[in-house]
Length: 465
Ligand code: X8Z
Ligand code: ZN
Image (cartoon, rainbow, N blue to C red):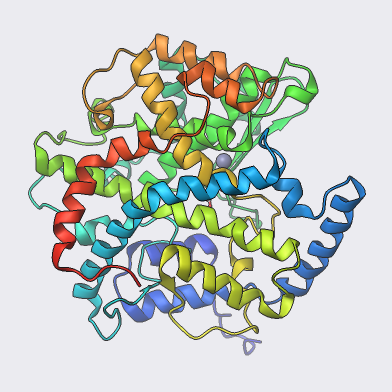
């Protein structure tokens, strides 16, 4: 306890600590923020163990071997086939991730030194610009491929224009209305929480809510003036407009085609938030035109989308094993870091033990939110984007397409959203894309110029870990 009269040391909240991870370049400062946040989790461990036991009891009562099997049963195929499907998708994308990892590690080594980031070594988890090393786009400025190209720094522009929370959400809404979607209902603006309250604690992790049965749609999010949050706003509005399209269906159909579809809709639109579109909003000055500008652009996107893939997969890999009893409570933390190493090639920056409970420091784990949905969404969104771009009449490379303003693309999207969960997801996929399964090919196509560039950059590197 602080001595009487002395100011109590102020505890930083997750958003403050995330800001350190996002902006600091100092090893020790980053480490303190990383370790500080992860210190909140150990008290959750006994509660999590009890949650696993109770969840499994409930799953058994409705005929599932365990909670993981229940989660894997939501994809219009057998749970075994679904698990194999996630492995198939990851297998196709892993070579691109490995190239990105290799190059990013080399660049970070040049900054932090080879004592700290060795050859063939995993990347320390605290220097990638994000608390969980799940999205690396915040370190883009440190490793911009080519200098002197048009700036992609949207955060700076948002701050310069002093956009407030409501204005940022309105920008997202404008994208949807440009496709022919309805404006958000008045109650959305009255009942959403968009700004971090100063007088009380709230869960700031962004979420979208469908309250009752009469189009009462709300977002809860502590919006900050950053590009990351502008993208997250599009993500949340994707949920909101999905709800809006199916709220009149029978209640059992008031859901996404699968949960990966729900997570992928806003992100699909956000792929159309291209430099050319941002220029029309005054959020970038110049649009990249030549090969170098293109590589900068694709590299920044890859730091978000490609870097995310192994993280998106491993969270449930860990939980599936926990629920199935393959990972015992005594091994929770070491099993977690084994997966972090195997999939992401990252390592904890300070020694860990079973006194820690690092999975508990990721929102979705204590919040009981399945995570494979985000892995699927990160792949689907490129497939959706490719189909909508085609509907919009786009010709030329996929990464230059923006569907902004296309009523034809909007119509195709609305038709799919309006199905809700009334059909198997493969049919919803077919209706919108003409393809009846997940195809990582669209994502690979989008990033193809970058893949070639990375391969060239890495030719004298020893990749892997
Ligand atoms: O949790 C979310 C959304 C709410 S559904 C903000 N996302 C995942 C995360 O933050 O870990 C979006 C990207 C992945
Ligand atoms: Zn979401």
